[in-house]
Image (cartoon, rainbow, N blue to C red; front, side, top):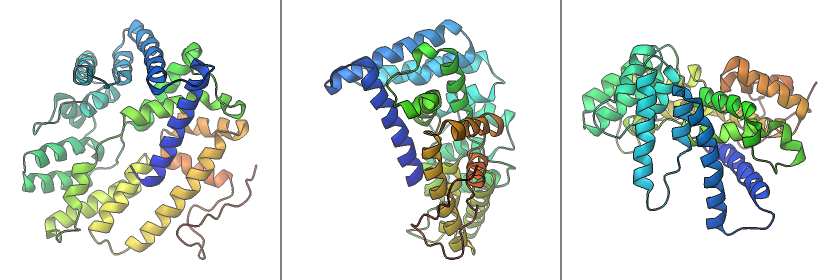
Length: 336
């Protein structure tokens, strides 16, 4: 996850924890007690989801399980078992298969849910990340290059973060009693969105470690076929991603693969991401703008398009002005 996305997600998580503290206790509690109260809240969420008895509700419930303490390994195993069951119940549900694949045990064999994703979405480059991971764990260098080329030849790159956020948003809208109270007044209208985004950020972000390692040329130059595969993967992620974090990974791949236009790409991406981070934070506190912002989430299911719409409404150009310098903000007054 890129730095700005980490900051934004961390700020959302911080808002949730602050709201939890206000909602669950009137006095400041020791960390252990606060965590216990959060566990109690999570238990209520899990009970509500399990009562729905659907593959999607079971998958959501699994992601709420917190692998902490002495029982962490057992909790991880329970999460995997629930997700495996959900995947078996809904073999053609792309979103359920995604969550199961993300939580499968790390081995050099591609998991059944990941294979299901290849069957269901062969044109989605993101589903081939699991094949990259398996080949890397098997130390199959040629296999990694082959899969990278397959990934780069895809039509789109869509990970499950957006869909997971919308699943949680639907849940919290249908269960207002489970929304944490205690948010600042200006954030009350966006509480469900904040909580949904926080849940998704904790459970639906792909692991790009092996992909990045495969294209990292810091220690030695990339071989020709590997460089070409990394360039193709980077272009796909830059231009056809549905989230900012995968777009930024695309920028990194292109930098390592020495794309000829990398300076322009880096400048444009930094500008776009910085402007969006500021506007997205302010949108959470503006009821009118938040209504538009959330409508974009529901209609586009694409964070890049959401960012474009947000900048356009604010009168901010999508590309940096000629005199813009990295690290600077160039926000113009918000327009109606």
